[in-house]
Image 1: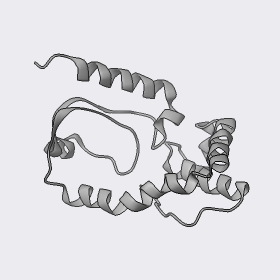
Image 2: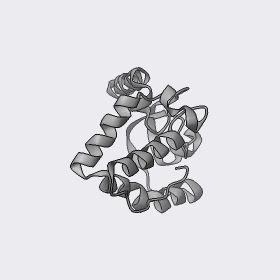
Image 3: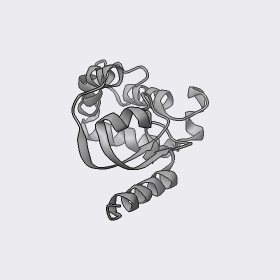
Image 4: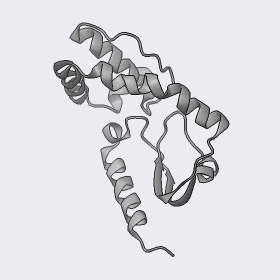
Length: 148
């Protein structure tokens, strides 16, 4: 992830908006961070931030990133020796890090669907909902086909 830094979360709604909008801008597929609201609807962002604020769950949601960042970096840098032998589907949105199919095939031995998606970043379902739904459908179709 670009700029994964988990610092103590703000203790005000305004601070939380600033913190989360910064992540939306940095991790979304936008031409420039200042143009994040060309991709994400302002009201939807406010709804998202409000949900985190009212439920007090922003810090626990961000904790996953803080606790897994080093492990994921190591997987991409060094690889892993375990194999996943179940049917697998992957939609590769414009996120960071982005796995290559060659890299993924070393671990996931039965890739049935792989697509490098042209739009959408880390928040693909939020940024490109129609494209995200089409990817879910394509993956489900590929995973439910009989074994060749």
